Length: 461
Image 1 (spheres, one colour):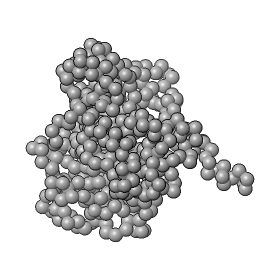
Image 2: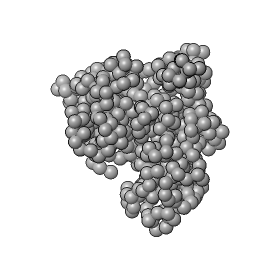
Image 3: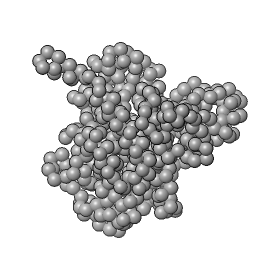
Image 4: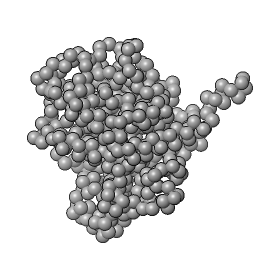
C-alpha cells in the first residue's frame, strides 16, 4: 500500500495543531443509510477533553429517517414507540484527518453503538462484518471507487429556486477526455483535487466525462473500509467546495434523461497476509488473456451468482434504475468480460494488477453497502468454489440471452427479500431494515406528481 497519506492526523498531531490555532473544529460524523455524513461540529478543545475518549451521542433516528429527515414509522430499530433514544458514536482515530477545504477544521468518522454492541444496521458496521469474514479466511479486500458527477454553474439555492430545471451546465458539449473544456472547469475541479488530496485522500487524476459539465475525479485505491471513508468524505468535500465557488454539483445516478448517467465503478481485489495480491495465478480463464487463481475464479463466480440479490445495495434509489440504458456505458446485462465496458463486470489488468470492475453502481450508491454486498457475494463464491463460466464477447447490450440488472427499485427489493444468502450474511433484521428503508423511499417518490405527468396529461387526458 502507498505510504501514509498527507493530511491524516494522529491525536498528538491534532493536539499540536489545536494548540497553535490551526485547527479549531473537529467534524465528528457517521455515514447514514444514504451514505451522507451526519454528526456534529465540536470544538477541538472539547473533542480532545471528552469526545476522543468517551465518544458522543446522537439520536438513533438518524438510521431510521428518509431523505427529508422525517422520522419513518415501521422500523423495529427505532420508532416513536421506542422513544427515539441515543446512539453512542465512537471515533475511529485512524480516520482523523484535516478537512483542508474548510477553515481550521479536522474530521473523524465514527462507529455507532448501543451500549457495548455495534449497531448492525449501520452501514459502516455492515462493511466491517464482511471485512472480518474476509480476514478470517486470510484475505484483505482492497477497493477503489470511480465517481462521476455533473458540475453546474447555478449554486444550490438557485438550482432549488429553478425547481432543478433548466440549470446551466459547466460545459456545453460531451467532454470525455477533453482538456480544453477541463481547463474551463479547473477553478472548481482543481480546488476539489487539491482540497481532497490535502485531507488524507490521495487523488490520482481528474477528467472530463461523457456529458456536458460531467467530470470524474479518481481517488487512490485503499483497503475496503478506508476507501469507503474516502468516498463519502470526498463527496462531502466536493459539494462544499463547489458551493464555496458559487456552483453546484450532483452525484445523482441519472440527472437528466437525455444525458449519460453518473456511475460509481467499483474495483475489487483480494490480498493475503504477506501483502500479496491473490487474484493472479496459473489457471486459464476462458474468454480472457489473464491467468488467474482459484480464488479469483470463485470470487467472480460469487459476484455473478448473487448480483441480482444484492442489486438494492448497488442501486439504492428509484432514480438509480433510470441510468440502465443500452448504449450509455451503464450496464444492462449481467455478464463478465475482459476489458469490455458493455458488461456488468469488466475484468481489468493482469498479474498483480488483476481485478474486477463492477460497473453496476451509480454515483448515488452508499459505498459501505455496495462494498459489503460485493465482498459478501465474492467470498461466498470463493467458499463454494463457484465457476463464473466463460467470458462474454461482443456487445452485451445487444445480447438477448443474458440475465438483466433489475429494472426498478421494486424489482431489486423483491430479489433481496427472497434471498436466503443475504439473510445469512447480513442478518434477517438488517435485511428487513433496508427493505423498509427502500420501500419508504420508493413510496415517497411514487407519490409525487412529476413534470412528465403534467406535460403528458394536463391537457390531453
